[in-house]
Image 1 (cartoon, rainbow, N blue to C red):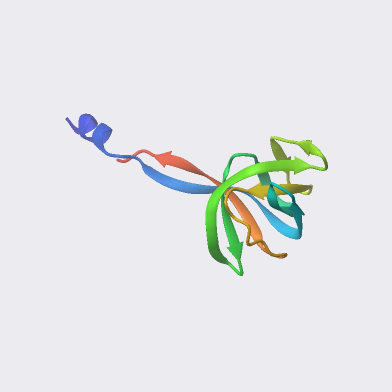
Image 2 (cartoon, rainbow, N blue to C red):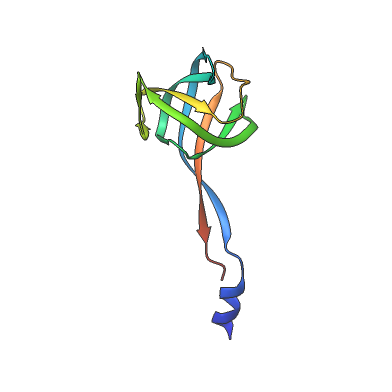
Length: 111
């Protein structure tokens, strides 16, 4: 009975940070919008991952990465220590010095 009850409980979700990048420069691209020129400081930035946009330690926006480029090439991920261009879906209020933090939701089984 106990195992059946545990299966009925919704799992808890925990946000695990997978990488962060500092915005160094902003580029305006016609028909696309604004692109954040970033330096990846920790972890890995992956295209399509969920992001938090931080300014002075405060979460300003949550969403997804719509495009990720290294130089002129579309890439799937960028490792720590490299620079990249990040396009954010539906967010254009970018400023130099902001932090883009990627995360993933991990399920924690209820006990």
